[in-house]
Length: 81
Image (cartoon, rainbow, N blue to C red):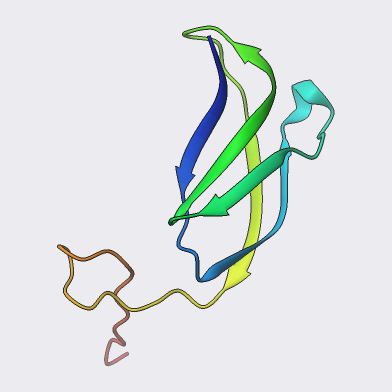
């Protein structure tokens, strides 16, 4: 069973809202955002194979990867069109 998970999200991004899906009536979840990860306390324990949904609303400006793809981040390029 699992009651806490971690998702990757750069610390440069700000979490506006984080909540569970429809089965849990969109309850706000407790979390910590550190080290490029969101550590989320789930509303209850889930067994292997049991589905759950987490909705994350966030904002911010992602950093540009200094050496993609080896050093994390995003790459931004503009096409001629």
